[in-house]
Every structure is written in structure tokens, then in C-alpha cells.
Length: 120
Image 1 (cartoon, helix red, strand yellow):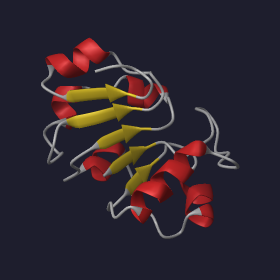
Image 2 (cartoon, helix red, strand yellow):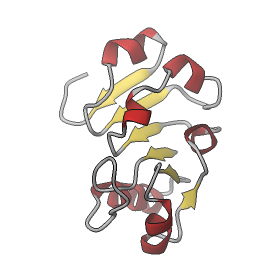
Image 3 (cartoon, helix red, strand yellow):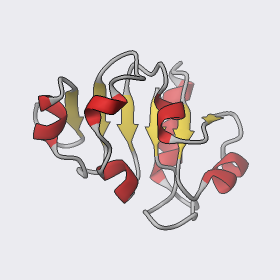
């Protein structure tokens, strides 16, 4: 499982009380193999949750993942090309935990798209 984002909000390395790391930890506790990537908060995230796996980039984090979970709404994640990302994942399923992605774009690229709090 690929978790995109660890910081409390984009453009920050602050992970204090960051729901993103709580979600990643809970997924791991449920048995998922979790790899996290965040553009700025990697060092702080490693300190807070050292048992998670960390990657050096989006595509490294997503390599072989069955599910991608968006947890912090970085512009870098909003602008991801779902067709390019589909070349490295094992399963094209994305959970948009921040309502930051264009559902039609992801579904048009043959991804299963889910957003927290939204039907379908």
C-alpha cells in the first residue's frame, strides 16, 4: 500500500498530530505493507513512525502497491498522471482522503476511485 503524504498540511514538514501518519500506522497494524512518501516531511515522519517503510519518491512508494491512498494534498500529488502511475502499481485503486483529485480523470484512466465521505 502506498501512502502519499505524511505532513499535517501541504508545504510543511510538520507531522505533529498529522492524521496521515495515523492512517498509515493503522493500515500497517491491520496487516498492510505500507510505504510512505511526502515531499518535505520524510525525516520527521521517520522519527514519529519508524516502523513504516519510506520511499524517495512517488513512483518508488507506489511500486507494486495494490492501493494508493492520498493523505496530504500536495500539488505534486494533485498533478499526478494516473496513466503513468498505473505503470508501476500492482492494482489501480486510489483512495482520495483529501478530495484533492479529479475523479473523472482517474476513472477515465481505468482506476477504481474512492473518496472518504463520498458515495461510490
